[in-house]
Image (cartoon, rainbow, N blue to C red; front, side, top):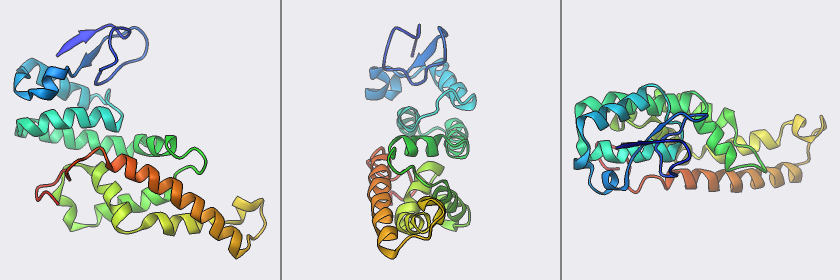
Length: 197
């Protein structure tokens, strides 16, 4: 693990504002996580605990290294970092960044979070983000929330929309939200679960 000034490298795990330094997951770590020293591991754990890592891509880089290590000391910080990422609206912000024409529904995300919390099967993964995204997909929450949104008079200047208008807007939301969901889920080649499913 190396530390560089914020203008030195684009391969950072996290970057802080201004000219502060940041930690980097080097290509060597990704190809050979065994090269990770105890100090490097502690720095990555600290970056998770202090929430300096705040995108799905950055969290996945660390998760891949930690998954290889399979060490109990990294499980709690990684689990907490994923929960923070979802609950601090970073997941919603990333989804909305992918859905600029029809911003992703916060109500949809909230329902998925509640369903994950109430699902005994949630214990199969340490990754709250993946569980939430998977729940959106498996429960087909996108279509439900797209229709609810499209039927709101507020979406139509206070007027009641026609069935055709509701269908048109719902279809547009479904298409954009589904593309964003699929893009986010592609961060995982295999499910981050104890069962592999």
